[in-house]
Every structure is written in structure tokens, then in C-alpha cells.
Image 1: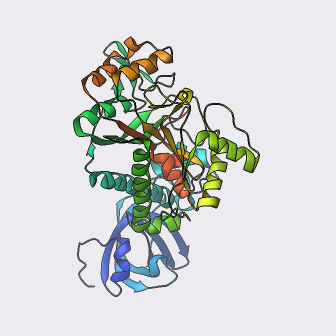
Image 2: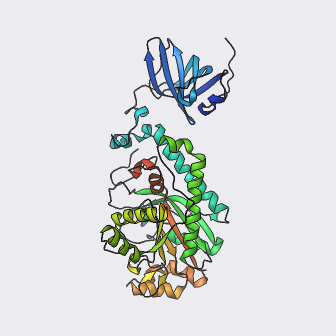
Image 3: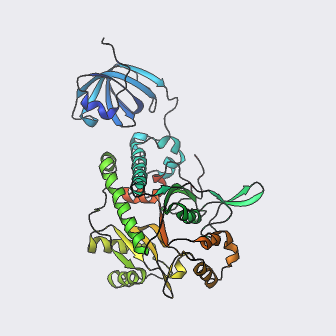
Length: 429
């Protein structure tokens, strides 16, 4: 027998090693016994490879193994090659079968079971592909902003008060005092505009919302951006449009295999993103689709219909909604006239993915906005103090990485776009 090198070959490199002896390592993804021939699908970080044995006892699924053999062409095997194996070393033997057949993961069939045993089911090829795409989205997010002279910041996640108010705060005992898990880095990223002008953060945020829908999480990864010395909210939209198009383009370039596995298609980024005022959007949806939406914002059905309009009329799967009423926006959103604001939402495939716009940058205007809403400026003393020391016109936005990932990949439940999701009923694993 030839001497085998200890050098490991990843599965994705096997098509370049036909006729050579290799050593591959990974997990037993699946196995079949056809009489005297055994087939082992070996999974590593780069994909799956077929290994063929003769008269060999294969270990349980998910055992960690090392296989040695010769690479041969086989068009019916994954990647068009297989390893004719002559040696099998069990590095770590699985002692019990996995709780579900990972090779047959199906999000629609048994979602609760998959989430209950997420520490094991996250190994599945689809789960792996989703998280790889998400990692690439975040990598592209950082790269685009870094190239435009933004500085990444790191803000506290234990805070004295909620940045957005409301009841959706997780309370924690902080050395005997009441504190909260941060629901947004809003205050801090505005403060840091006065330091670096252009800032962003990639970090978890926490929302104690009672919502148990397929769109909500109690903890998610927030992609936050804030930029100074803008003219108005159009600069914020221009930045978003360029950023999200770049993120989508990078996923297409670097995650082609994952998109194919998940049967997902990326949006056309070559068309301009339409921009429509909220009141105009409401009228359009009512006239064209017969759907009337009340309240301060668009309801989910109105968002879906507006997404359909943007796709059919403009060829865009993105659409900006602008000029929200003051009642629908936080006090720090820059007013526009008597009743409107320079607040902006970005919808993707009929679902909101960012909320933001231009902020108020003058101290007197902030005090006026608080007073107008019957809010006591004294309760915002720490926040308001920053604006007594000179703040540039600025604005920003935030997106949830999981929701963006789910919409891009067509995942019906946002929980499958996070490795270990947290919601109102899940704190394990």
C-alpha cells in the first residue's frame, strides 16, 4: 500500500485530485449498505463527498471520521467524484443516533423538533448554507462601509433606559439597580457621529416583544449605521441603496453553491430603487389593489402589496417609503413641515428591513419635539446634553441580519436564519 500523506484535502478540492490518494475528514452525513458495498457521505466545512468502501462496518451518523483512498470520477456522485476508500479511522464515535435525520432536514415538516435540538440540527447542509450566506452579508456590510471611511464602534448592551422607550425591554439586576438589555444602539451611535462622523455597529439587540410570529426574535443581530454632514434623508437612502446592492452582489459572487442548494434567487441590483411617500403609497394600494390600511404605518399586507407594485412597475424588489407622520416616528426624527418627518423605511420583497432617516441635530428642536409629544425633557438630560456641544446634520438606519437573510433565501420562519434563536418561549439550546 502506498504511503498516505497526513495532509488533509477538503471535499471541494476533490475534483482537482482525480487519480490521487487523499485523506479527507469530517462527519458521517449519511450512509447506505448495498450488500458488500458501503457508501458514506462525508460532510466537512466545504460540502459533502461520497466515499465507497468494501465490507466495512460504518459508524453511526454524525460520527467524526478520517477516510483515506483514491479519488475517481463518478458523474452521479456529489461534485462528480468519489473516494474509493481503503482506510477508515473513527476520530470520535457517535454513541446515539441524531434526534432527526440531518441529511433529510425539512424546515416545513418539523420546525419545532429542528429548533428543539438545534445544537445538532444546525449541522445540516441547509442550516449551514443559511448561516454562510448571513456571514457573507455581514462581511459585505462591513467591507462596503469600511471602504467609505466608516469606523466600526462597540456600544454598551446593558443600559439605564431604552433608546426607543416602550415596554419591550428586558430588565436586569445591575449591582442591585434596575437596568435593561439594549433594544438599540441609537443613542450611542449618534454620540459617536460627533467623534468619527461615519459609524456602524454589528451587534445583538434585545426586544421583549410578546409577538410570536415567524418574523420576530427576542434577540437578533442588528446592522446599524449613522452618518454625519448629510443634506437630508435622500443621502441616507442613497447610502442604503448602494450598501444593500453591494451586499446582494457579494452573496451572488461568493455563495453560488448555497443559493443553488436553497433554491434562492438574488434581486436584480441593476435597477434604481423607487421612493414613495407614505400617504401616496396608501392611496396607490387602495386604488390599485383595493386594500385600505389605517394607523400610523403600513400593515403587513400593505407592505406586501407595495412590494408587488415596486416589482411590477419598476423591476425592483426594494422600495423606500418616505415622509412618515410624526406620530409614527421617534421624537429624534427630523420633522418635515407641520405633521410629517424625514423618516424612511426600506422594504425588501414586501417586508420592512430597515427603519431610519434624518435625525434632529439641534438642541432646541429636540426639546421642542419632546415637549410637543408631552414628554419631559428632563428625562432625556443625558441624551440632550450631547446636542449642546455641536452636532452635524446626520441620519442613519438599522437592519436585522436574520430578517434580511430569511427574505433573501425564501425562509418562511426567521428562527431558521439564526444559529440559536431566542423568542418568547425558547431559551435553549
